[in-house]
Image (cartoon, rainbow, N blue to C red; front, side, top):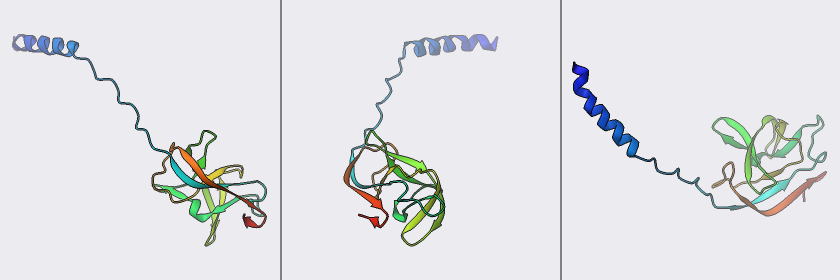
Length: 133
C-alpha cells in the first residue's frame, strides 16, 4: 500500500517530463583560422639513408605523451598525425612511421593550432638535397 501513495507523484513527474522538450544541440565551436609557415616535404629529398623521412625537430608536437606533427590537409586544416620518432639531432628528427614524405607540415608556433584548425599558409618552404630553400 505504500506504493499507492507515490503513484500520484510518479504520474505528475511523468506528465511534466512529457511536456518538456530538450533544447537544440549547440553548434560546434568555430575556431578562427591561423596563419602559419608550412614546410612541403618531397620524397626522396627528405629521406635518410634508410628510407625514413627526416623533418625539422621543432615540427614535432606532443599531445599528452603521444608524438606527432600537424599536417596540412587538402582542405586547409591542420590535422594531427601520430608519428614514431627514431634518431634525433639538434635540428632534425627521423620519422620511422606516420609520414611518407609527401606531406605539408605546419610549423611552429603552435599556439591556437589544434586538430581541425583552419590554416592559411604564411609561406611554403620546400626542402631539397641541400636543406631548406
